[in-house]
Length: 159
Image (cartoon, rainbow, N blue to C red):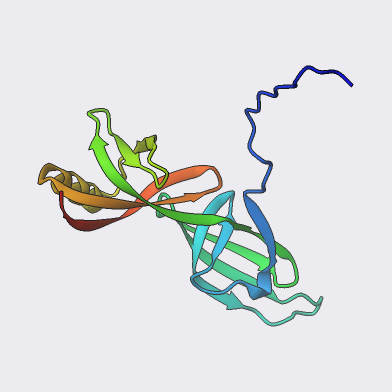
């Protein structure tokens, strides 16, 4: 065997899938589903009876978790749908830059500087006002299918 060590430059992730399959008939309201390649929160599910040729169909109405658009899909209830892995992580807000990016403190003490301020006007105003007043703010970041966005805000008191 050789004595030299091998070093690998890995630029890829672990290859974990962004979604997992779930039978359409088992997806319920307030769950998540992928419609037209967008992660959505299910707001309405209706199931039609089996027709002459067999399959019951599920009609899903979902709202995109990042841009709020309403999307619909009809899938046979025995078929599999893609369900996105949705995670929500809280970070402490450190700074807001002039170009609209935020600087966040992670649990391990490092900073995360690649997130933009949210597009939602009321949340944006709350974050800017709270930061200007010098409050300690914690933002919830929702991530799914390679996208991340600030979705909520908590005030943990003055600095």
